[in-house]
Length: 214
Image (cartoon, rainbow, N blue to C red; front, side):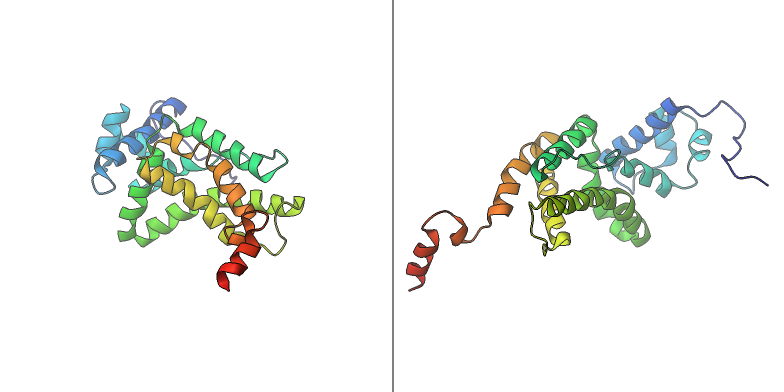
């Protein structure tokens, strides 16, 4: 017995156009009704396909949701521009171009919150949709360390937390509008590199801090 693509069922050949329409319908319906209101029947109707077309591709509703959420993953390897700021700017540009017209950035926080009622689904969303983005950020940070832009003893996980959390917060406050993340690297990276203590503010600030302490 050989391995390979599973045999197709009867009916029309699988269509990439139908596949994309189904995933788009999932995102739209999640935005309107959340996880609890999502049904295969509604997805089929919105996508203009039969339910059998969906079940040929996904065994369960959760698998369908997971693949829709996976569209958050940046395509290909992390951009390598030669600098930390350049890499982050390029990543933002890639994600904005991909997701500008999608409701996915607005949907993912709602789905993550609602999926807490289903710990297995929640864990899979984190692994398959959120984890890959963090993986890209981690690689960008480690490149910064290798280039000498960042300290070798840097807590990489915490740095990734900060770089990931700020765009997510901006998206939440902006209702999922991708323009909210534009310019974030230019504002955040210098702040992180310079630090936020009074001694990092510029010449003479350390002396001023000591005078205040006295």
